[in-house]
Length: 361
Ligand code: SF4
Image (cartoon, rainbow, N blue to C red):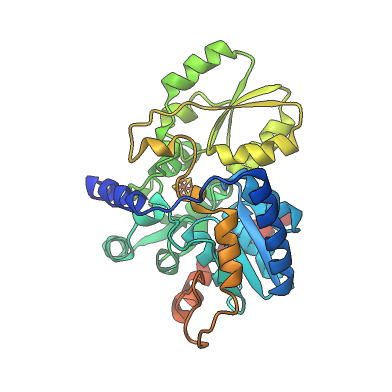
């Protein structure tokens, strides 16, 4: 096992936050004005807006109002790739913009901010990860979607949390040894579900890592009728007390499917926007966090996702026709080197094909 989530990573994360620019609070009149501007600009610039479940509600609202897509990183990229618009505005974090670019290389991909990243991406630098893989050439390299384009390019498979167990089982059937990166909690969960040992990288999500079983059980005493929904990036002790464990989309489906009227939810609270829509009348309670990790500002809301706002969506749209030469990305534009894109598309496509084959059976 390699411990990449070291004190150094924590310090690096703190430094990111020190320079972070959160969108300022807006009143209703300002929100309305920004939304109206975004609607005009999206049409004018032939652009489409996609957003992650963890972005703020106001970002999800404008995405829906303009016919865009709110989903997980892969569905955002897939949706963007089949849209007729030539430009995508990706509200999320850096690896999501890169994944969209990899699946739509002919399109321009812009983000409200290029500063928004992810502790899993930061905690898995390509040089160290590549050296680790080189030490184990007999292993198949499986990486989570929450990684840089360079790490994806080094991998044999990219997986999402919803398909990870199935892919690992599939590889085991072929007697493959597996390297798993970067989320150690999701990796542990996959090991526990499959009984398959993997060589593990030690990254973690600063939001999910903060959930604590003790606090959740105390809250459950107050709401004993509530079901506990948990994302598998959470620690094993939290997963152990869950009534349902799953990816963002699977957790929303569980809230709809289960008979309970109340839910304690251990994932980013941005998901409540879609959850409430999918299961109107049901009540969702944010699971408590320890607040002792990289930053207590992470309490059930990703500080990088929170960097996306209406103001910088307008900024990114206005940057589309900025005066730049073809070989130079515009402000807000995601750039991935052509060779890297080609290499990263292989493990991504492998997962998409695997998922398609699974669903056709
Ligand atoms: S919630 Fe966690 S995994 Fe998702 S982008 Fe933020 S830090 Fe990364």
